Image (spheres, protein in one colour):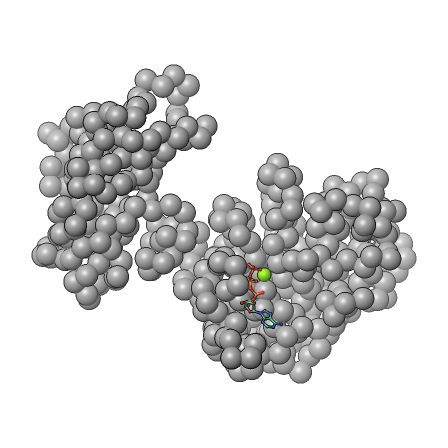
Length: 392
Ligand SMILES: Nc1ncnc2c1ncn2[C@@H]1O[C@H](COP(=O)(O)OP(=O)(O)OP(=O)(O)O)[C@@H](O)[C@H]1O
Ligand SMILES: [Mg+2]
């Protein structure tokens, strides 16, 4: 049994009821307040603050090594913060050992008990919490069905595939229905189809049980599908916390814009300002008109971010008489590469300035009447509202 054994068995959480804490209505369920963790001189988590609401599905995204697992381990009680506080329902949980926290963690490396069968691994926490045998049987059967492990109940972990082990770990973490469930890349080893169906089932289960989920994933689409809010982490800090839509459509920084999804970036300087527009003079895209952002931009040096699906291609450009010609940014170039991806096609266009721009278009009909081919000259256009202005 490793230090990471799932011995996190507060009886209060077993019944799915809230623990006896003095939560007031406007407090978040979980408050992370300036929490930091160093390993030697290295800051794995850097004075990070975050509120999680009850019943929320929260996803943590970030590059490898940015501190996601360390943060979850501090929430679960397997790691002690060097500074800051973690409040659950308004109560500081620092003195609470892992098994007394109404928090369960599914570990990135599964941490299954090798000597126990699938069934006993799933039942482990329920037994320790003193659940009645008959109730355990029902709960385990429910979990086995949820993660589609029927028929494998008697196997030991070393007789399972990677994806099957991952599902046992998921079932084990869910079985006790903790108030807060921490999932460290729970679906990474599953094939795409099974991952998608498990995502939907997890979301349904989370809603049905009113549990609070914090999930770490490297799969942005997964985070966007499942989470109410996403926190993007880098080097131990939260770069931005937002809904999936806001994170994608209104990133706060160049780093977030590049980390989430695909983006075209033009660096430049603000040349002039209108009440509703900024005129930005860029090196690679000439003069680009952008809508005035809600947050005022102080600096003159800016980057303009445009998602590929907002970049339209045309043989002759948009019908300018139909729209205000100043409302369109229009560049010219040559298609250099076409990637057909099924639902959409991605075009690489080399602008006359030499810069590359990506445009993606949904394939809404089967016949490729609108397709562009490599070598073709095209007009590349997008509107001021399609642009996000970011400080450099
Ligand atoms: N016990 C430890 N001792 C020393 N350094 C550690 C320890 N645990 C983690 N680290 C370091 O802290 C940093 C954060 O690690 P962590 O496991 O939290 O990253 P992560 O975001 O979960 O990465 P991944 O996506 O690869 O799982 C890494 O640089 C890691 O090497
Ligand atoms: Mg990790």
